Length: 128
Image (tube, rainbow, N blue to C red; front, top):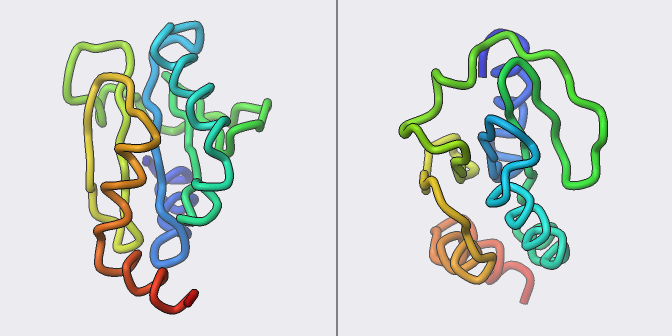
């Protein structure tokens, strides 16, 4: 996502999956509900190597509990696909977009999307 940001996020390729929350205002009701949902499923996020990235105009941060926002080098509108004040993007280990939607995402649905991915299936087999 922009010069510094794309290098920062691309460092996760083949290491982590990314869940990018694009938001115009962090007081947005859907954004707050999404954060709460994700915090309740922290173990599931860790098990699936999922990093949450928050992006708002001109700033971003990584992690569910990180307080400090970093200055972004790009405008959020470059990644938004709708006029909605909230969007969520799932990026797989390969760097490809696996989901892009502008409404609340239940962790159950998120995990079911990830769990059918070939690399995730391999991870689950290797754990056994």
